[in-house]
Length: 327
Length: 170
Image: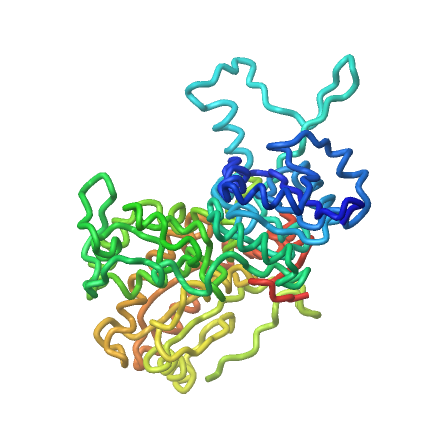
């Protein structure tokens, strides 16, 4: 805490879409309460602070730092380490920082094939010289440097100790506010080794208002192919819903809006691998009494890896493609 | 069983690599089958570390991904033939989970030969020994998987060293 008696808070943006920064504003007028007790000491999205300002802070200057986004390049790692040093409490904010999030889906591909797609094969590209970004480029003004692209997307806890993890894509405003209150009031211990906050210990199904009719899934369909019957469990209707393998906390928001759960709150408590957990859950839900039928039903699921690990590729057991870096 | 101790990878006096397979076997059929292979003194490669579970329906796909991520070169899942489950339909769940998991493992770049799912009855010691021997030779041809090394090379866990959900595994 600084001389004016106010808390110092920071919000940093790494490999993410920026939705987390917006979600902090989603707490609405309560942001004014927050500014009564706290000063913003870093928020690249909203305020003009330079990295050298942060480096000049004494260690532990920030009372709470929210770090959103996963770590894809050397700049993000550098800031993770710097902010860990400058923060009393470091919170991984959002699915990307907690579990890798959408950017970590790239872990199913090698960096080489990502560069090939982004800088050479993309149909809207105009890159006749086949230029790719280089970490170092000589220029008359000296060497220009870009952050180094890492071979995989990592979640924050792979880089530094994280005190709390607040999951969600993005975390829901009420959960964010509860977390801020708990951290600021000292209701939670200052450091707690990556404890998940702002979520429940149960799955999304626990909060889901839809009716379970205890029928087995007899075939998978996608949302554009039919109109699901309102009020009836999506999975039982053959629409893939990540509810059984996803941690609660959002209040089944998507489901109440008419869409199946996508799994953004990450794996349920005591589970590490959300995709494996979803495969496990489906085992008991499919109407398959012969091996052929089981094969047929399984083949109807399009892209199981991409859908089961949509937000948690970097958090599962495997984390990256086995040949990454070579293929 | 005549199952002999394998030299773990990286152990002293074991400079040559040997495939290390984790086998999840159901108690009622497949484990009894493996036991039968031993009693009948059928020879098979000593590369499988057997984990006995009560039912193949108990094998959470996470156990398989965990085995790979902690250094297994292959994973073998065996249960009762469909229709023979001691718990009526435990293996019906297995026969959905394992093909689904196979698709996921392929997306992670794990060769199909490294993950095998089959049915072995209590009388099929011969089949068990054949499966293990076959799988060992296929994996030997592929070489080590060594996922932990791959994670270290990518820098996973080089900072916090935290285990799942804040448990400190350091």
